[in-house]
Image (cartoon, rainbow, N blue to C red; front, side):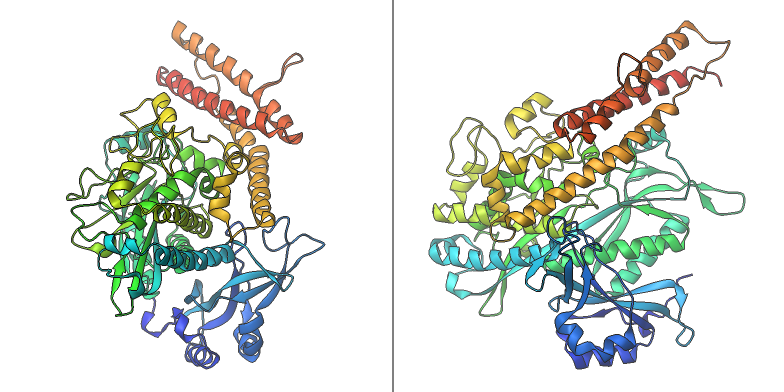
Length: 638
């Protein structure tokens, strides 16, 4: 199974080989590549996929490399832009990133004995021959703006060179180099197995899975995945078990069953656009390889209630290549033991913290994502950072939103780790809005001629203290455990009230216009922002109406009367309380409507404020019901 002849297979066509002659030569050397697919990325982060015979592509390559291929508004998610009556969309090849070959392990070419491959060409969507649209176009524009604007800001504030390690003068900079990476967590299980929440929770508390040895098909699939991804040039770093999961069981036939495990795989950084493309590639390979071993994978943020969800920590860095050819990290100071960061670093971090309310709708855009962002599961719940206890001793606080990663022995490793994204986040938009927020903070820091000491004082301010940039009634830094050392009320007072639903998150677009302007200026016009808002709202309302509400009803139906003649008064009282809760959530009467009915009606009349409040109440009551029912069942003999 998956015994691939990797030495004979084509995995990538690098960005410096995208001329016509090089492409044709490579494809002729690799007859296992049968098809070409133009992968345009829409506003939702979905990429298109089609099968164009390789012969047709080579015969029409001059036109396709320039004009791409056409699709329409019904095949991509671009509401308010590519409508049914205005649906012309072209997919234009992006020749600045690597192209990769997507292999079908289940379809073997009879002539070569190799899997049939499809050359995937990342593409920019263009509407009506004039307007680049979609998440890929937004990220491209944000990166171009960041690089151009930061150079202009540094030239206007040449003092900053005095505080950047390895830089004597701003004039020494040849170009800005941005680096990003994501860490992918996911759950894997045998088909049709249902999770035992109590068993999973207990295993998590005992740390029985975290970084433990993998066994059976999970081990083999993980190793195969890492080996294959390395062939694509991703420079794999590691794969390991994450905190969630339980031990699998060995059947009488010698096979592993009842697999329910959480894994993580990591690879090295790249340019932000390449990093976003790499993440998509990794997900496809993970799913394909694990499927070959009879295992299901899910990239949901919270696949199982009550245990750890899956994050996709996103790293952001800013470097510069000097005219001498040397590469330096713009976040570093001259003396890394004296200050945590340069003004560029501090400004970047402060920009994300101040403008995060406008970033968040691009990061947490599903109901499931909010289920992950709860205290106690190592997922962030507040807009707060940590720098470390002392510049001489880099430390990590895993309870904050975004942290500073430093290694005194490796200055190029200095970067930020944003901990709120999940595997379903649109990485193109996470990175686009992240770099734009960083640019906003850099401009403020440099325009004020702020030094590292000035900026450390700003980011460490207490509530009620005025600042040149950050908000007066907020705090932004904590070296404490945010989950345990603050009450919910204290967290809200110090770090702001986090949204609880997709609707509350989307309202940030109206509540914080200045912050929205900071993260969208020059990269999203009103039509584009409206397109994204429309997409997210439709997704939330549709899923809520036709998936979340029916799922809640299914949960309630599973809570059935289970005691018999041996019932005690405790059993009778427990069931009575459970039944009342079941009726309140899901059962209508002539005089009253259940929570589920009220939620459906609120969605139907587009009363999203009420629908959002009801969603919170439904989730709370269903969780309460599940706990009560578990306690009730625990007291029964059968």
